[in-house]
Length: 465
Image (cartoon, rainbow, N blue to C red; front, side):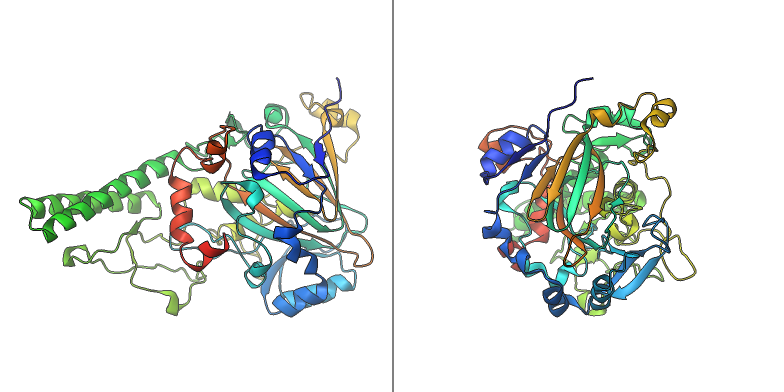
């Protein structure tokens, strides 16, 4: 077999238009080695341990913990710790702890927020939407930090989102296989579909579109928006005293109520639009379990009406995605996915830690550290390491990895800090792969993600985008 071409690397910065047409649309990984990104991300160079402690030492975290260097992160316990104490332990070369994705609060639209701690206290140092990524919308932003002098492997897996990975300290080795190799990767899940953009769907995940949204959910969202628009028009007609307006408003109300009831039954988040008409008033319901999954405080409960008793839970397909994406790691892609979903479900240890799913669907059964001849016998369809594209990422460099690309990541610390540190963005994968500037401005065929983003990030957050 001919060894695959090396991943392209640039020493100069690309414009968003060039980046979109050359790599995002073509779904090809790329390394950016130039330092010109400092204009937008330059504040990340301030992230020394002293700076991080000064800004975010009080942040409460739940970090991965392992009993011995031979153990894998994620299979042991989760340790509650303040960020300042975590930094002190890393400074003492403690390689038993690892900062991965943190629990996310659930926003009022029923989806997780983009940032967890400690990034909520460091948010002024980076943009929510890097200009390089054009119209792509973030799903989550994460910080990853640990000590791994001898290297720590993530295991072979793929993600469900486009990844912009910014390495700030240490070194990373990525071994990559394209989504087309999914049938040969011996994943724990059974592959049902590979979308043209590389988004992989597994049996049991339902009707997931190329942009990662559940198609049934999008259909219900479209129906609710249409019903809300119909009701708004009827209210305006009532205000003007139009003939038949009251009958139309009653019909529109009934339609909206039926759709909201349907969302309640399906377990989908269904936020009711606020109305001034008395008939539209509904009692606000925010159902919290004993664990207070949303982390909301009482002063955040405003007069927005929630029709679904499971507003602060999420739907099965999205839960599967998060759980499968980021578990069980010596690196970031193996973080605890229940944390990423705002703790949708609990599998507890005696110390209150989360017990990870041992077999996330998007992880391969193949251990690349094993001898290749043994792997060839046990996994005959696996093309072997000779088919992998390899990337050595240094501090100050970035890697773009489209959704669905299989990768094994090995992390190495470096002197003088003896730690590795990275920031990454996960973006909803684009399903409109038009290479023109118009495609870059509208990377999603549906208005589902763009509308949710716009509604969530009005006001102060929108000013940072």
